[in-house]
Length: 432
Ligand code: UGA
Image: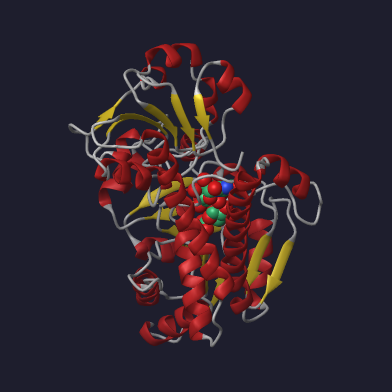
């Protein structure tokens, strides 16, 4: 099938590349000419495992192309995906101006039947608004359908999540686009859920909020475990092996961050309030998440006492493993707090160092260290802030010798407490 994807961010680019990989003809549209030029030249603006190969292979095969023209996308494609950002506003609600602008542009170029699919994470009733906008701005009376098709990919695992999804959710307001959507997704083996557009939109917010709730539950448990002298990893494992609960997304740590959970949680609380429901449960999820970082900073200050002029090594800047994304990263938040208290940082991340520099400029208080094993040199403490598996390979003997005081504060429970003690570290982690 011929498809256009408007917006080549994480979701748009990975979706386009995966659709091309299964044989569809994909045209990715972006209004940033530099990005289009980069992509056409074989460059990838984000770090995402497997993506570069996928893009290169499909561009070479002639199934994937890039353009700056929405008109071209609308003209050439039967199905048009909207995958533009929906950033948060100050009050927690979602800024839908990019979606609206794209809807108007599609309307201005619509000359025959098209299916317009919303992939961006949006508040319930957005598909209805998009349809209304297209109807309003379309010059002639052209038929079209608006479909909601939320995306569930995780950064860092995006290609895998897209190629092997747990489910595909399609929200339609008439039967006509269902056949095309089934054909489009036929190469992907997954349960196919067809529902109304409002339910489809709610599925996304409900799923992300529930996952955030699981993390906050684990983080709240970690506080109880610490006070009781229990081990949160043992407790969550014992709970999670109950198939009704599941072991995933129960890792206690620094709390959740990134461009999705914090934003979607705030948005869902707002949406519920507008619909007349005070979703206090989710407000508590937010509170626990914020408190988790406060507790962690306190753990560092309780150990080091005064932070001013202390040298602290920080492993991890990305908001989680396998990505170079630092947006709302707990690791960056942590670094900023330590700097504010006067500490000097030596930081490292396998992928996110470049992107981190805009939020954490190098200077007298922040030194970027390219080799993780060199980070502990001269440090009064070493902090683990992101769950990169690479960090477990840290040369502990070298670190122990290189540090001024052998203190490790692990915000991601990457190390075994007994082993760390054997190496001579004063080791603190979360809920253990
Ligand atoms: C999340 C969802 O997992 C995806 O299903 C969804 O499609 C995506 O948002 C989206 O809305 O676009 P993502 O933000 O890429 O994906 O990252 P996650 O892997 O969900 O991690 C989010 C945060 O939670 C990270 O800061 C991570 O460190 C933290 N986390 C995750 C924990 O603290 N504990 C866990 O057990 C799991």
